[in-house]
Image (cartoon, rainbow, N blue to C red):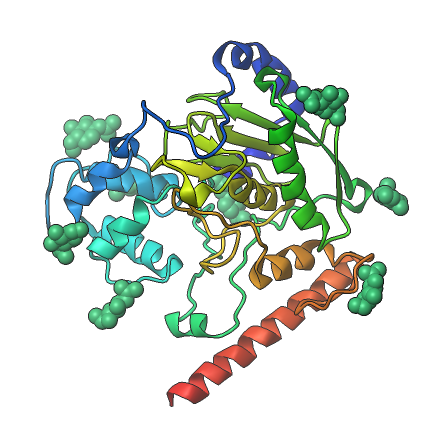
Length: 366
Ligand SMILES: *[C@@H]1O[C@H](CO)[C@@H](O)[C@H](O)[C@H]1NC(C)=O
Ligand SMILES: *[C@@H]1O[C@H](CO)[C@@H](O)[C@H](O)[C@H]1NC(C)=O
Ligand SMILES: *[C@@H]1O[C@H](CO)[C@@H](O)[C@H](O)[C@H]1NC(C)=O
Ligand SMILES: *[C@@H]1O[C@H](CO)[C@@H](O)[C@H](O)[C@H]1NC(C)=O
Ligand SMILES: *[C@@H]1O[C@H](CO)[C@@H](O)[C@H](O)[C@H]1NC(C)=O
Ligand SMILES: *[C@@H]1O[C@H](CO)[C@@H](O)[C@H](O)[C@H]1NC(C)=O
Ligand SMILES: *[C@@H]1O[C@H](CO)[C@@H](O)[C@H](O)[C@H]1NC(C)=O
Ligand SMILES: *[C@@H]1O[C@H](CO)[C@@H](O)[C@H](O)[C@H]1NC(C)=O
């Protein structure tokens, strides 16, 4: 979400009840199976398609519609000031672009080059990369450090997580969607990936309002201030702990089973891949600049990425520790002591690793 910190004060259950009737009227289910033709959807359905027109633009240019780029960068946290965007390529846009390019491992030139535009139009998670002006995604880290095993996972502001008393989490599907068992199984598999590397467990419940994690497919404006945008564009968004809201754009061409890479639809999105990512947010992870990581913000159509990367595992284990029932080796610690002291020690280890990686980089370069 754009402003996660501001949702902390909401009362999810109360709001959920008040919005329930609205959602009942507006949502329906359209999950599908690959490969499936999609007559109503085409290339032009990407809400960001027009961004290609701005390729090559740089500071000083003035071009009609450029304000949409600023709006995009605002939406994902790169421009904090939302008032009245103009079509001028100004200092604000240049510095926002540099931050974006840095987070996505591009040359941070501040020029809206082809490579950057091509990255921006890839479908992505609706959660912002920068929350409250603070980017932990790749901020301040020299690009060369990405050549080494440096962690780029991030947390939400204040590192919110589920308390130990809620490590056995329940999840429920919004009843209005009436999902079939095949679709529910996709989510179950996605939860299992996180359960395998943490002390957390996830159990489906039919009691929607009592579930800690509430999953629903919605269309457009669905009452949380973060409207969905139809096919492509933003795919889903989720709230930080302990809100537990996990929303998917019902207008995506979701592929529930079958090989998404062979889908005949150019806008087919793999449901499990997105589910694994969003659960990461529900558990407290922010975005990562590691492209292989599940928590990387974007995923192309017809792409499947469901395996947690080391970066994801290190991040989630810094919050919760490892799975006490597993003896698989991991680069992260296996300490399931989740006391503050434990967390601080883990954090210290992580910083030491980063310092050492920096030294290695330095040594290689000089
Ligand atoms: C950007 O890419 C398009 C093709 O995708 C190409 O026609 C155009 O010349 C490129 N523009 C720049 C500035 O490289
Ligand atoms: C927004 O931008 C205007 C003009 O650049 C500036 O005066 C104002 O302080 C900014 N507001 C915030 C919250 O940054
Ligand atoms: C937006 O900018 C235009 C042109 O600079 C100005 O005329 C208009 O009053 C501004 N609107 C707001 C709400 O600031
Ligand atoms: C960055 O710029 C260099 C030199 O211009 C180029 O070789 C490289 O491909 C660029 N990297 C990206 C990610 O665009
Ligand atoms: C941003 O973070 C600062 C410091 O943590 C906090 O005081 C402020 O309220 C936050 N801003 C918003 C809009 O939440
Ligand atoms: C969670 O469930 C496991 C058994 O699956 C149990 O051993 C553990 O005590 C439970 N934890 C909490 C906090 O209830
Ligand atoms: C779906 O699963 C539920 C509970 O596991 C079961 O009762 C129901 O018969 C299943 N429905 C179908 C269509 O398989
Ligand atoms: C631990 O690892 C050993 C050897 O790989 C394996 O045989 C054993 O089943 C594992 N135990 C658990 C609880 O995973």
